[in-house]
Image (tube, rainbow, N blue to C red):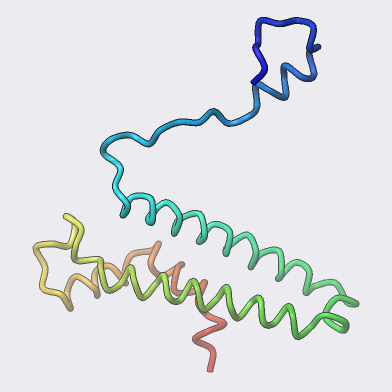
Length: 130
């Protein structure tokens, strides 16, 4: 490991070493479920970026002619993943404090009527488009 006090490495090496991630132990309050939730959130973010990228590439005239099936498959897979996330969130919305006082159907209807939930449903549109 590089020491930051050693000037013989030069400023570029020291700057690169400064950017390297440090091994950090997770806080004691973390559980396996917290790690899975973080992984799920990162995979959702990746899925959204991938979907936007595929949509942007599909606007190029030559790309759809040569790779149309691949682009459609990636778009379908990302939309299916977003639909799965929507279903999970809809099913578990009553677990939070905000909807705990409502009956299950009322809680799900209230959650589905929120603007963020409507946007999540719109993101699943390619899967829901029969």
